[in-house]
Image (cartoon, rainbow, N blue to C red):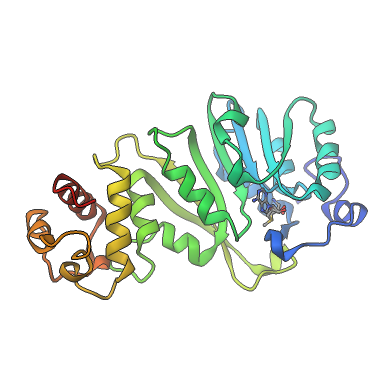
Length: 283
Ligand code: SAM
C-alpha cells in the first residue's frame, strides 16, 4: 500500500524513539499498512464517533484510524517511551488525537471518551486483553457505552470469544460474550506481520452489542458458568451441586438434563439455569 499520511514510516519511528519491544508490556508492533488500514475499515464508520484505542505503541493503528477519518481517537498507552512518537501524530492531526498515559485497566473509559458514540479498536496487549474485554462486556448498563469492539487477540482467544456450544473453545467467555453481543472473527493475521513476531497467529474479532440480550442477572450468569465450566468434564448435576443441594431439580426445572455437560448447553440454556438458580437464592 502507498503511504496513508506524510509521517515517517513506522520502522523509522521505532528506531528514532528507541522503541525496542518489551515482552512485559505485550508489545508486538504491527507495521503493515494494509493490515492496520484493514482493521480501521473493519471498525465501521468512524467519522461520527470517538474511537478508543488501547495500547497505540508507536501509532500504526492510530494513524490508520485517523487516516480512515475518525473524528477523534482517544488512545491509552502505558509505555511512556511511546509518548513522543504519539505526540508527532497528534500534531499532524490537530485536535483529533488525545493520548492518555496510564494503565487501561485503571482508567474509566467513559470518562476519557466524554460521552457520545464510542467505538473501541485495538491491537490489545496479550496480558491484559481478555480482562479489558470482560470489563467492556460486563458493564452494569446495557446497551454499553460502546457501539462496537474491533480487537486483535491471539487467535485461540478469538475462538473462545466466538465459540459455539459443543466446541472445545466454548466456555465462560463465549457464553458471556454471546449472551450480550454478536461476535465474529473477521480475519487472521500471521505472526510474520509483527515486530517482533509472536509465537501464535492472531485474529481480529468484531463485536456489537445485542439490543436486547435474554433477560438475566449478570452476576448470576457469571457464577453459574464459573461453576459449570470450572469442572467442564463433569455432568451438570455434579458441577452445580456446590451451588445448591437442589441442583438436580433446578436443572430439570430449567428444561435441561442433569447428565449434560457444560459444553453442551447453549446460551439460552445457561440463561434459564442462571435465572432458576437465582430464584432459588443459590447464585
Ligand atoms: N497498537 C500498536 C500496534 O498495533 O502496533 C501496539 C500494539 S502492542 C500488541 C500492545 C500495546 O499496548 C503496547 O504499546 C503496550 O505498551 C501497550 N500496553 C500494554 N499494557 C497496557 C495497559 N495496561 N494499558 C495501556 N496500554 C498497555
